[in-house]
Length: 108
Image (cartoon, rainbow, N blue to C red; front, side, top):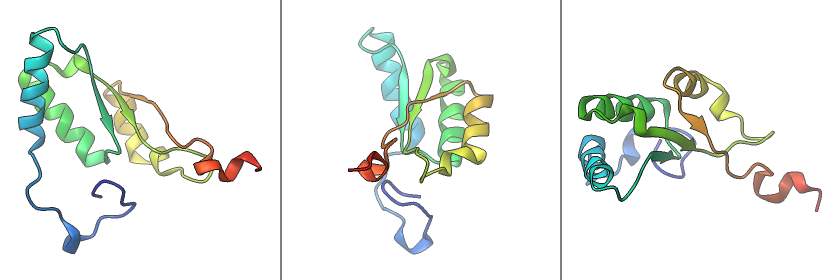
């Protein structure tokens, strides 16, 4: 799914996206320059995580791919499917956002 979407729609694919490998190359440059230490993903799908791992492995920085930040709460459990399995396999930690479902679970 594209950023902010919960499902994939073929007719809504965005044009002009920067390829993952190209972005990973830029991040490798920043790592080599000492400007960043690790890479974190945000709102990524299982396929996206696997593509990121593939690109980082090719560039020799797979150990720098550290976290993913996706929505996760009692009401939003999409991470619990194959995405959790992929992140566990590749040792990528979850930094959840919206744990109170945008305040819905706060009781206010």
